[in-house]
Image (cartoon, rainbow, N blue to C red):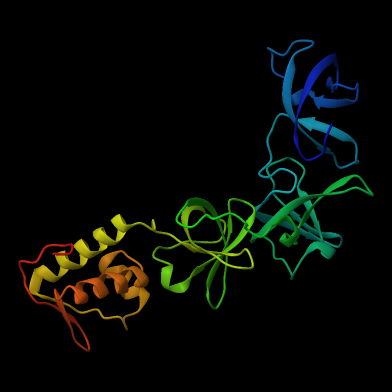
Length: 282
């Protein structure tokens, strides 16, 4: 029977407080009556989350918390107490984040990246902002692959992310093409695996088809009046607003069009040489 995880247990007996469940070696845990369903029967196997109640007694619940052992998620602070901060993790009893596990001062009603950990000495579950030891360097070649991203904090270079729940990554400012907030879970694409195992991430697919679509989009805008008031010096925000693409994709697209002699580059705008031009190399 493992604290902080979903356990498959068998209903051993029913009592006034609830049902007692047992594991394969005979350990027992109470499932309080409020979680019992009418269809439950003796010897039935059910999935429960095992944790400790406010009196440090091991109990179980059929409710699933927002995170399991050694997982991390943005959780909202519900209370600040002398022993630490309490966060809402989806169960009746809030999760304690001791002051020793906080990286900086927390505030009520704000959300922070919290990991669920287990203290073997006291046999207790607790929340922690120290997640570095739960991450690992990437040793796989994930270049170009679609991955899951947990959006974390903004910094001077861009926004940090956790990739596939185990790797550190970064979306550079030039590649932020949509509004994203910490705590969001979205898809992304790996641009580069660095020597230290950290990942450069993009929000767009990294394929030749993507650049073909970007080139077509630039040409389409140029065809409207022959000019596009964007350059490689334009801000990522202006480029995204006008074309819905990152600055890097835009620069690569106009680089190809310039090489193919489809456009002229001016100080403040791009000019279409042949208004009948279609996208792609000719």
